[in-house]
Amino acid sequence: MNLRSLPDRKPFLTAALALVTLAALVAAAISAEPRAKDLFGTKKLPAVVPAQSFGFYSKGCFAGGVALPMEGPTWEVMRPSRNRRWGHPAMIALIEKLSRDAGADGWPGLLVGDVSQPRGGPMMTGHASHQIGLDADIWLTPMPKRPLSMAQRESMSATLMVDEKTHLVKDALWTPAHTRLLKRAASYPEVERILVNPGIKKELCDTVTGDRSWLRKIRPFWGHDYHFHMRIGCQPGSPGCKGQEATPADDG
Ligand SMILES: [Zn+2]
Image (tube, rainbow, N blue to C red):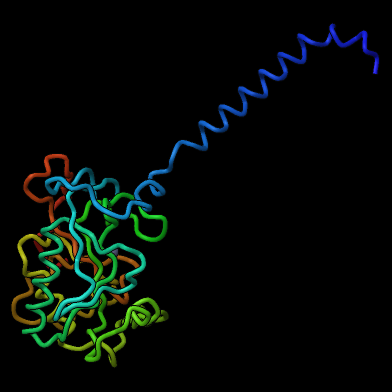
């Protein structure tokens, strides 16, 4: 190395060093900007304030949520490790109420899938909605007589009610009790929509006699072949909650 050339190169080296430092700082700032789903997906507990939903079902969050207990006499939470059993208190109360009412209809108890994360928001995996504490997935499998262990609730596979080829409900699996469960869920005024696989909607349209007004709330949506999705409207005290248009008046 020619030592004499060093002083001449110093300004250049200093500038290069400054540039590299700046680039590193910018990169750090970008990577430090947290993604919403990381932010919400890692919160273990809700914010302790009055219950309030913000935004829309597929873009929002909520505060003051409560958790559905892991189990009650008439329900069990499935996939408990996901910690998605949180919701607006009205939603959680409604799941418990449905589980009791369904029992009276001959459905032995609810297997409850995802509700929301402790503060809602987007999730690391699955679901576009379920963000404001007003959506819940309920399995179309009745609660077994023997209590499920936590390990079983993680691993037990769901029953697909719809044939993947014909897109029709599997006759051997669908029972009048399934229909009664959906009718009961649709009967609550706060429930605005129930999402089911199109095959299930067709089954109901083909078989329900008498009062068909509740079919208006049953909406066909891809997936939803082992669970149904119950959505309630914005609750009082949530001025920032964006509602959804009412479903058409006919049976859809
Ligand atoms: Zn859902």
